[in-house]
Length: 274
Image (tube, rainbow, N blue to C red; front, top):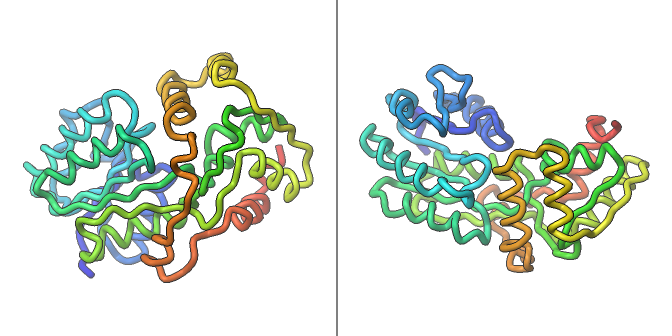
């Protein structure tokens, strides 16, 4: 185990902020990579990345909104080149499970000559409490396409714990760590579980992707997220990820968090009370 200066890109995001917390508790010098940090890191301003990279030894990379979106490959190429020029020793990237475009971004880092680890995950548990599914849950009506697809939802606490190990433990260098939760859930089962635990009436409807896209546009969801949701429902939610792995338990020595436990913990915060 080694201690280093670590840049966490997306250090205020779903996994990034938890990685920052965990590294800081271990006494690691952490630099938060975000637009509001100093020095700042903005994916739209590659001319400023060098300042954020200088003096760092390792980098945790999260790309918003997802490595599958257009422009991600070019951004990761540029970041990798700048990292190499700044003497970065290791890159750990959060990638999407079952996403061909994300795998192309992984390959850029794998072929860079810099030490690397890839952490792949499917849908986050926290998509229902911190992201685009929260508002429909609060409104009491959730509608999605491909509602029957089984998903091994993964908790961001588990992802952050694995990322920290990948950053600090050399045994995970050159490894692709594919993370899942321990069980498969359909979207309808998820909403029923949240409704049961919160004692709320939450309607669920399976709709076409066309209707879902229109609904997102009506709610002024950013175009990049609309593109991503269309990509995921069209190319990824076809059953290819309807399986689980034991990677979280293998890395952390404990089981991955069950979705039902996430629901109980999250319900206790009141975030779903409306």
